[in-house]
Image (cartoon, rainbow, N blue to C red; front, side, top):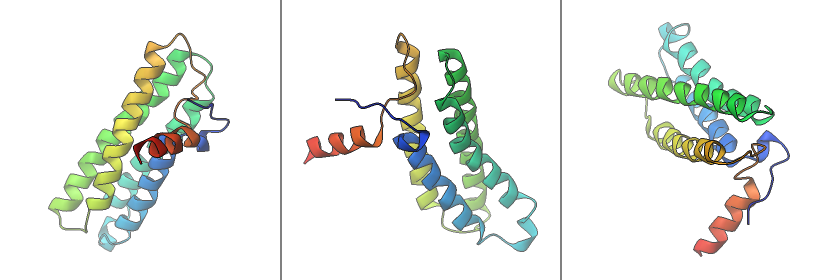
Length: 140
């Protein structure tokens, strides 16, 4: 049974996106000082954009508005993927945690967007934390 999210913080996709932001901040602290206004800044901005656009889209009333914000978040996911590749190639740190999280966020956001796209209208309230807990309970 799906439960309605009351706040954007209840969405599993936002929770995972926020975890990704925190991981990016931890990772980028290990970058050389010369990257403060370069890769560190760009990477952090792109990561924050993912969670921020999910949050902003949550309260949009029309399906088109919601999907526009989620699509912007998807673009920021792709931008962040590139920054992960670059950080790895430049040997700026271990990107495995961030890489795993971005894949989770990407899959959740794609599924979430598809549900909204294929529904008559959802108030952006799919996959709340309780739904995720129920899903995990069914796996055990």
